[in-house]
Length: 130
Picture (spheres, rainbow, N blue to C red):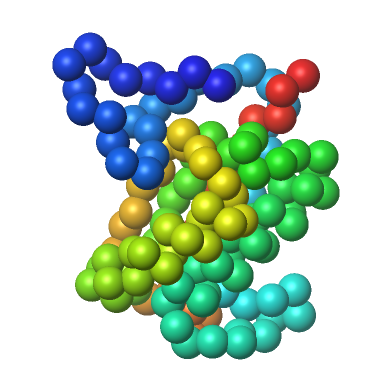
C-alpha cells in the first residue's frame, strides 16, 4: 500500500487522504454494533464501534484478508458529539482490533440508521495482495 500525501500537505491524524494498492478487492457492507446473532450488548458508542470493527475483521477473514488490508472506511454516526467524545476509547478499540493503518477514511453524521439502536455503521473496502 502506498499512502498518497501531496507535497506540503500535513499528514492527517488517524487516516490517509488517499492510498493506492494492487490486489483482490473485498467490499464489506455497513457493520453495526451487534454481534453475529444480531444482539446489541451495549448502547455505549465506543462499545458499538468496537463490535462493528470486530464484525468487519470477521467478514474480511472469510476472504482470507487481515485488518492491514483495509484501504477505505466510511463511518456513519448518529451523533457527531458522541463520536468525538468517545474518540479515545474508539481509538483504543481500533488499535486493538485493526492495528496501525493508513486507510482512507470518511466520517459522516446521519439522522438515523436502519437499526434504531445502532449508533454507528462502518463500511470497509480491503485489497488483499496477490
